[in-house]
Image (cartoon, rainbow, N blue to C red; front, side, top):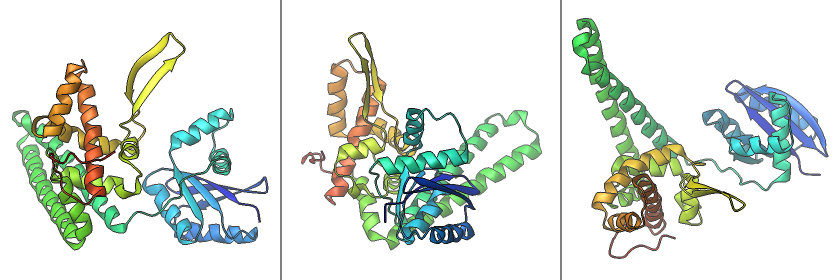
Length: 325
């Protein structure tokens, strides 16, 4: 039987699905829950389809449940960057924007390209990521409340009391989540070893190490450090056309934004405390590079070092100058 391609347009409540079989398309809409997933399996049986190549855009938590279901049912699944689908739609001069049209375009995209197969992330890593994000959110709320309290002379006593109580409670909750994170790492020594090894890199603290491990999920799955840098959106992006148009190069930013944010402060610290990064920053400065360019370059270098540390299951040693490329 010919290969069957399925395009899925994901929303919070619904999944719009187009299936292409022998150049004929079939459409259905199901709810984005377990009941809807079972309806999808029944729908496939109507067309005597056993296995499909499914594709959907990355929409965070809304796409993961169905992707995991498809994987468990032995289907081939791919989750792609929405920018890829958007570019493909523009190349087809698509004039309409509906869920049904989008699902058809995604199915066509899957039929024309070899896509990376989706593999569910280790549940422990998912839990670690959830705890890390929770700490970030609570810390952000705490900073906001502290900002309110800076002008407390302008606030009513009842408001001050409420904010101070919220501030205290948030700190307690942050401590609880961090303790749960520590317990999770104690229960999973292999992951803890990676995080401990990352912390041996000058400038890298525990929070950043947890961010890298939880957001990247499987560093060893990358072939080299350049792929990891591309995943973070830290690779250069050139803009040149003919002999007259040549814009200043920038980083692509087509990658994991939270990972870039997590690496910014460690890069600033590494410029002061990491021997290799100090040398690297001095070299770039001597070439006339501005401060922002230097910081971004150090962020990328740190990822290269992290890749070497994790890949070789070792601690950082400036004397050895790890081969991380």
